[in-house]
Length: 318
Image 1 (spheres, rainbow, N blue to C red):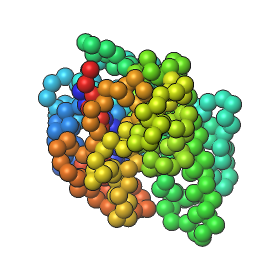
Image 2: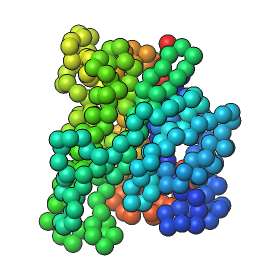
Image 3: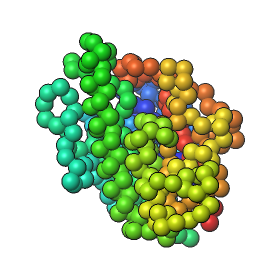
């Protein structure tokens, strides 16, 4: 069984403000996305940047077999949200966007009301198979791409850049705390016995402070001496499966020519024991060809086929 996460990048039907300009561009995008999903053959795929729910249905309709689409009700100002595309039945157990108490609202700009909720909801489902069931949460944290008042993507000065960089970090940290609170409930006090996966576009790399918030108690990471020595913290930890990805594949986006792994799959201790393989892109390929993106308006790629992210996945056996 393969589980993965993929930022589909601006999945809108044509004709709107953010979608492809025409039907031909839309169909080219869907064809490219569908080809990758067919090659992945996932049982559960967490998805991000679904702008039109109908567009995800269109994509599912291009795949063979029966597929289920499940979307968060909480979208951002562009209408994008997270969800699941699955060949297995699922049912929703959480769909939240408010920061957990007692975390207070965070400053989101130079003026205006502070943010008390995530830009996109955190959606969690229970997946049922013939052999067992497990819980999966999908998220899409605040981007490192900074936007400024008036729709600008370039600052007036370095002071403004620094402030808005701080605002984005405040929000991404608070959103990570929200995801962790959802994960805590799914773990039910002991991830050694409750199978939980958290996946999505975290918009930062493995060692980033916001990514680390999701892991729980420190220590025992894959590849460290502590990994082979279980302790009480294992009940509450989530393990980032990134170290299991071959080094040449360990990226999901290229930013300004630099490879970054900003999409992640995290697993509880019990579920981690089922993981046999991890990767990015299409299984069996050494590396994924991706466009290099910069700090421009994301709508600039509205007519581009495919996505500027690579899927990140794990394979499990039970």
